[in-house]
Length: 451
Image (cartoon, rainbow, N blue to C red):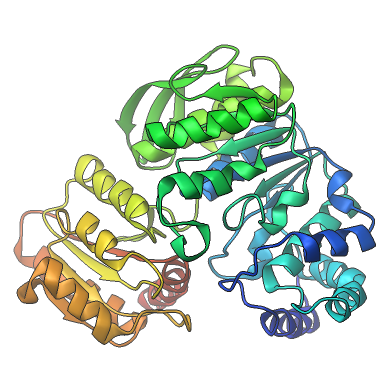
């Protein structure tokens, strides 16, 4: 139980971290993080690691891998980014966010080392580098049996790439963060392939042919062992079920049937197949089928096609690029029977706004553009102009803040549902920040309705 004093200290720590080189500003190098972990005694080498990179699906897959290892009675440490509501979410131990007291102790362990490395470098330790080091220290001190580490951005120069992973995972790779990773998928794939370690196991999601070629070239260069989706393992059946889906997977070492996954979307079924292959690659044998069923029945993925309100139905999804928006649109089209959809969209300025809008347009009837509290959020006026070009002026509305946008959309959908035989819904998307803020707002709305 967090004390009020601990929560105040957490605010101070977060403020100190936020003053560092920001997460969205990158100076590509492993020099600073390498110097920091060397000073800390290389805590990331005290436990075996699964390292998960790619463009989309990393966090959901990390959570599935965590659930499987937990069911196998491993003490797990999971590092993911970005967070939805609290930066404590990024460091998970045994399936739960690190406690405020543990986070404070970990920060105190490394604070002087942060200052030491800052004094030796022209560029200070960044927010992400500091959080990454804190995760490694927390996992070493717990200690954990396995570290499940999500890449922050890219691969070869990402701060997490100081691990010596037993298994590397490459999720589907697409265009994103092009200002740092490259203008083409080939360039981006080259950067992301940098997490593949010599003679390690490498689990590869289905990729575009040009991406697959680059990844396999890296596998050969590193004398690694590949497991390819669609060849060494695959999703062999998927049926929509109440609250999720029922899947069957051909794993690396055997078949797993009738697995209930309480998440929506074909992409989550593929993520589940990748998670099974990842754990199989690590342990080297087929997993117990009942264990797999038990693990997946408990899986959650907050902010990913998450239904957070009923009457009207409100769904929150953290899609922030065209690939994610396409997966969201396809799931809404194929797994829900909504008469109409009001979409609340708040997106970050550096993203492919047009690509996201074009992906959503076929399934969205009305669009409410807004912005999150992020300083990187695209201005409402600019997003409105972009949206009108794709949706037309009659289908686009604007609200200056997320709370107003959500309230407006819910009110409109409630009115539609009162006069229609069908069911309409609200979908909130555009960024992880938007999804996280929406979760807070919807909780407040839910509490006010209970009174």
